[in-house]
Image 1 (cartoon, rainbow, N blue to C red):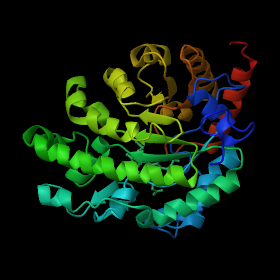
Image 2 (cartoon, rainbow, N blue to C red):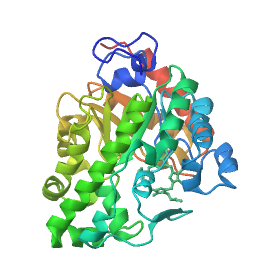
Image 3 (tube, helix red, strand yellow):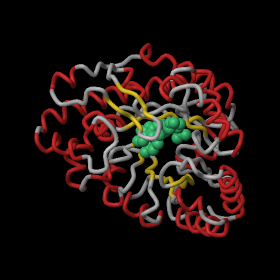
Image 4 (tube, rainbow, N blue to C red):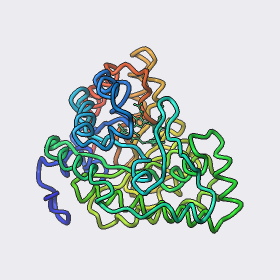
Amino acid sequence: GTAARDGEPRPGGPADSPFIRACRRRPVPHTPVWFMRQAGRSLPEYREIRASVPMLESCRRPELVTEITLQPVRRHGVDAAILFSDIVVPVAAAGVDLDIVPGTGPVVAEPIRTAADVERIRPITRDDVSYVDEAVRQLVVELGDTPLIGFAGAPFTLASYLVEGGPSRTHAKTKALMYGDEALWHALCGRLAEVTLAFLRVQIEAGVSAVQLFDSWAGALSEADYRRYVLPHSTAVLSGLVNAGVPRIHFGVGTAELLGAMGEAGADVVGVDWRTPLDVATHRIGSGKAVQGNLDPCVLLAPWPVVEAEVRRILAQGAAAPGHVFNLGHGVLPETDPEVLTRVVALVHELSSRRVDQ
Ligand code: CP3
């Protein structure tokens, strides 16, 4: 972007938006809100586009990426867009043979087992993901003052898909490799960290206003194992972006025991699932970081008075943090009524702009 990266952002531009201000722990006119998986199957207009286009193909067509990314912004009035893509897109661009199977998730043809398998994951350049570069550039124009969030999967979560060959409840094969061949594990995660960092740099150069590193499955590990096997690699990604000029969000599920360590990885904002109240999470994460979260996505399936009470509770607990971005504790479920999401955005804005703090 053209915003002055060292000084004050252009007034009214995306870098001065409530979302970016909250990430940077600056005063905000209202608590910003967006939803993980806000673009997706909860929206009939998304299902219509995707009816005839496979998932990975849709991620590689800039005009579809742009349209799908804009849908929830138009419909809900969220404070940020998130690029429509998937965490396995850069891994496929790096040469791994994989697909995203409807109702299952990513499936890898030949799961990673050996050092030779790791070597076959090539480093990527902008040219390998030119469709992402193009989509981001289009979106930045279309979005105007609304910030666009770029994202990538963190090394552990990517490694889990590559080693298991698909989604896993226990991550048993992943942990067997991690505990059984530590050198190979670090080689794999080192290579994935390079791919992830390159992928995030492409998005930042194309103009995204923030990035989120998803380590969705890191909560499967103890804190000691997280520190030994995962933290160095996530730190390599996040610290590689320290001078990139955009806030970095780091998120995982089931991470109550890991919040302190995840904060140490170098993020500006730590995403929290619904299991940990935001005031408790703020204390665990330590000072100097904003928090993001943390409505249980299942609450959106409950009657409105339940939703409203939970939104109030989360705003009150989030006020303990130096910055709060309202979100769910994980992604929007496909069966969610999109009208409830629109009401939540309006409610968060209304309740938080009434509050006189600072
Ligand atoms: O709106 C957004 O949040 C942006 C889009 C986005 C997708 N995937 C689109 C998608 C993002 C940020 C992701 C990241 C992603 N992908 C993660 C990390 C976030 C998380 O949810 O924890 C993970 C673990 C994946 C892997 C993955 N891809 C899964 C588990 C699935 C679901 C499989 C299914 O069918 O239930 C996917 C496919 C996927 N990625 C869909 C979408 C909208 C569904 C595909 C479809 O519409 O058929």
